[in-house]
Image 1 (spheres, rainbow, N blue to C red):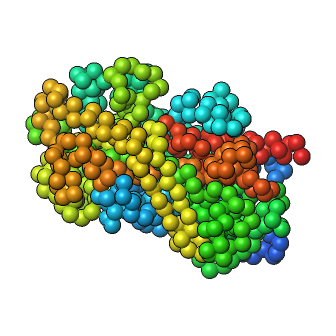
Image 2: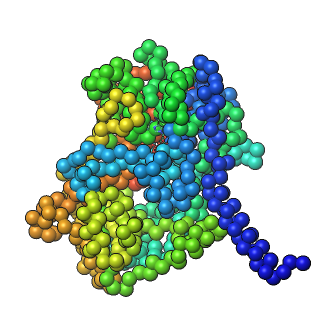
Image 3: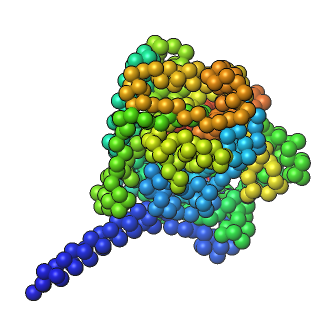
Length: 601
Ligand SMILES: Cc1cc2nc3c(=O)[nH]c(=O)nc-3n(C[C@H](O)[C@H](O)[C@H](O)COP(=O)(O)OP(=O)(O)OC[C@H]3O[C@@H](n4cnc5c(N)ncnc54)[C@H](O)[C@@H]3O)c2cc1C
């Protein structure tokens, strides 16, 4: 007979077990591939696989999953990181992974036109270092871009990349063709769960923009649009999970080595990429052969670095490090990012309710029901055309990511974005413990271009990065129009209703200009235009006649055999919106081209 006291103890025990099981499920190793690293170490030279994929990030996970659908080829994936931690799953908290073992963290050179508000005036570049790559740390926003983005790619000498051609790969990505015995990779996209404050924010911005008669862009753009995310009930759905993890333990021909840092590509003479040199577990260097091809999917900063360390890049820069130059290509040039610029307000009246329960309640909701504030995305994405107040389809030039927040010393947007300490202090003081509204403006089609080059002779310490945001006058003018748009909202009834006051942090260099003059804002742009972390373009796709091209339209590196780059770095021009979705499309198309070549052989 169970006494009442025991009954209660049993209930508590049950609860405890359920919570523990739900927590363990967040980091369940079965979601990820097993580690092939140990086994690689026991193998004798020559170790060989048909395809070597460098990087199990957003693109690499798709490529490896698709290639290994063919049981007749062997695929080896080499990933510098390990499995994602549970923090990566709770995507709303994953920004806490910056500057940990799960991220690559690089700082750009100080730049006269941007990032002056950052520590040491250096733009900060964050990427994921784990299975899933940056898709394990990003905001999960899923956007496709505009048809004209891809038509532009095609018109630059890249047949097969027009909108008409590439759409099928977005469609293919979303088709789950798994059977019970044979899982297949696919993209998982859903609506975000939204907290109460999101609806306040949406109404606020919709009404304010209507008051100033700012046109919305069609139904896929504009503040009325509720974007999709690579999420499922508050859990992250990265390609590392839904393409690679899902299939890896079912396929004998697919192996993934973790904590495996590829340092360079090895060539057979000057013509054929024959293998890679990899540092395994920090102390073992292995050489692994690729019988068919090597696919670089190490991302916009690391793919070009690996190429340069292997002798493919601007010969002048390589010679400086005594690296024999195999091919003189514009590797590392054409660095692009939307960049973003914050403007922050504080609510002084009718302050939105951000009450979200305490952390115990939130954690319980998240673990047991997969809802609540830890499962919800409070940010709103909108697009405007800063040049016109008309409803101009596909003509927006600024993307606005907005959020309502209660800044604290421990957690505030200035700190997260790594602004200088004195600015963080001033921001907190001026916010006066009030709820704030942040409006981050991103340039949809930035004209400025940066570059990276080698800084050290060996892979691992990071490249020399030059962001060059807002170095082109056209970008500065668009940013100024964005500022004017935001300032125009201050006159609306909606902004008055909430008593929204602009938080103006002191900037001695800018404060010599009259506040709100063009000169003041141009100076402000130099301080607050910072990375949006949508890096693209450093291994540009283009014909061999284009001196700035690194890969051809089949993503093969010009002038050598057996080597492709498949990741965000191949974009000739950045797409109009976040880059994760377009990178998945690139990976789907790239994998198909490899399989088509194989079928022809
Ligand atoms: C904080 C943040 C938020 C973002 N939010 C969004 C968003 O909401 N929506 C969106 O669309 N985009 C977003 N992005 C951008 C988007 O995530 C990237 O464009 C996309 O992930 C790029 O994919 P990739 O395959 O090119 O590179 P990655 O996903 O970075 O993959 C590269 C992989 O290669 C591995 N690697 C690197 N070097 C080596 C080596 N030498 N040897 C072995 N492995 C190596 C890395 O560890 C990594 O796993 C965000 C980015 C950041 C940083």
